[in-house]
Figure 1 (cartoon, rainbow, N blue to C red):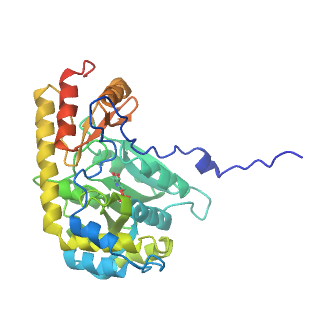
Figure 2: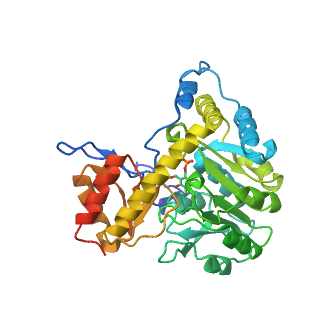
Figure 3: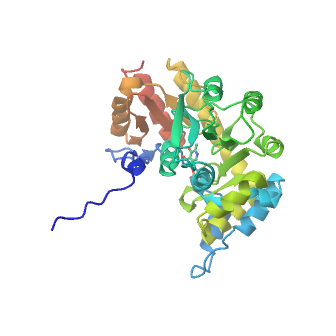
Length: 364
Ligand SMILES: Cc1ncc(COP(=O)(O)O)c(C=O)c1O
């Protein structure tokens, strides 16, 4: 008897695996730093860590609809409670949206999901697992979405469009003016997801006011997370904000109990201490400014970053640079043949990164 051949669905067989940022390797006399996953080097506010540690109901399931967190968010953001759907990280919230709106149509053909590329590397995975076809629109040399090309790519099969602002891994943020204009080109039945995982770090002149956009557009969903500014990546808490035209379907695709009691408690405490979160974000933005200026002084030309990372468009040198960083006990994220994303970290990590950039011989 031959062994049974176990094969996944064709879409899954063809998928790339998600490559998470690696931890740093130790090097003699150097403190190792992880600059590969856009984490918050300052961690959560103490009250959030205390709230997580104080949870005593570990034997009970969490509230299935994240009601307390949604109430706290509704209050904090001044949006209706019903418009918020929580998820296991914003990636969980995105998965709910894709599964609700894109997959295989009744005639067997794949729905289309348009997104910029390179962008967040989970997008192709989430889209293809759902059975939908992804339509990747290259970002420009400045790392910005090509909104004209994204609008031109809309067909009758398009079900969802993803926008990522600031864009991971290239860094630039969209402006309110350009998103408003883009939305005019999108048919009202196409869902537009605006992924704002790094929203708190934006300091641009015309930031996208996603809360006003979603309230005037029944087809817009906003994605946010506690993983970045709030420093709670380990607890996996994210959410979407959208009108009922979208949320009523997400409540069906959401994995039940997707946010743990521990995560919910920490997130609520973090919202209560938002002034402290803001101060930490301000420190990271200051460090970002210092790193960006240091890179410019050293002759590097990089896309303008509005997030907690910088993008080095190193092309074929990307892997070599990541190796050189590794020798300095810095873990960075290389995208072979394209570039390297480096998270703004602790001041010492940033100093070491800048020093490497000053001396690296393979700069384009
Ligand atoms: C653009 C973007 N969206 C979403 C996520 C997912 O974050 P989480 O699931 O931790 O909320 C990330 C994480 O790096 C990201 O960069």
